Length: 447
Ligand code: ADP
Ligand code: K
Image (cartoon, rainbow, N blue to C red; front, side, top):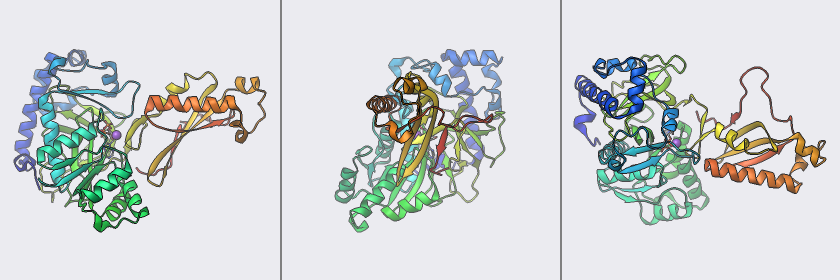
């Protein structure tokens, strides 16, 4: 089903015309209202009038996550704070989150693109949606919620986690649709099997899964385990939240439609920033053509993918492939964004831990696990007269088990994630031998 057929099938020349108009408005709008953009344009000697349409996009400088951080919390707003009707943050970071502000009009756009996404994923008005995305600062919960309302669905706003309750509601309320992260959908599938709950006691037909990368193997697992058809929903808070692109349930595995009347996509070379031709893999860059609260121009998502037109598709909008990886070392753990530098920041607070560390990421069943390997300083080992001890014995010393527990607690406070801490003796963690050192060992093989 198409939620907005007029726009979703708008002939390409008309779509371009609309995008050109919107981009021209946008550059004037931000130049007048956001000092950051005025300065950025002035620095490269760019007049808003030079931008006639999307063909001129390469003239515009990129923006990135650091620009949001530098302008924390409200420096990039293009309207007075009082005109912002909602604030969200990017998941994970509790240190300095990435803040985004929406006007009432932006919330309408958000609902519109999520409604389109839900419809593309198989949803129809009147169907019941169990929303297992987290409610709160994270865009997932409320984003899906408002979109489902716009489409005319019945929403069960259960939020993330609480597996026992999710399973109960799936059986008692019999929702048609499930939204959550793909790894959580796997958990639900496994728990059903463990409890020998027959699929017939459920009524699930569709799932829209996103917020983290996933594969065809996971799709098969979820589809078989929950008895439904699963599609991919992609998005990021900076641009709007989930609903930047969405797979059509009748065109599985052939990419996701980007709602490009609102979010104009480009693929650029990770190093040179040069725009790459259709089909080639590179960094996805997005421009919000219509948002008014905090518009972003040529935002580097750091997600690696490609763009292509699907001739047999039922929409005219361009498609993007699945996310192949990240250009910036960001990890996504159970849907939560984690930069390994956050671990580094915590490490700096501990006198008796060396700056050497390693993150080992694995997937136990359906749950992502992070193990942090850190070294105890030689000074502390000497003070405790433990220089010659083996690692297995380290944790038997109260001072050390306390150190590891406190470190774990700080990590949790700073990243929102529970990680397993393993103490090592000085010198045990691999050092760079000239080349790039892999601080992160990701054994999940998701990308
Ligand atoms: P979200 O609310 O979607 O988690 P965040 O801003 O916290 O938004 O995280 C956005 C990032 O999550 C994206 O840049 C991308 O790396 C990842 N992501 C979101 N959806 C998907 C998806 N369907 N497939 C792969 N990665 C995704
Ligand atoms: K995410």
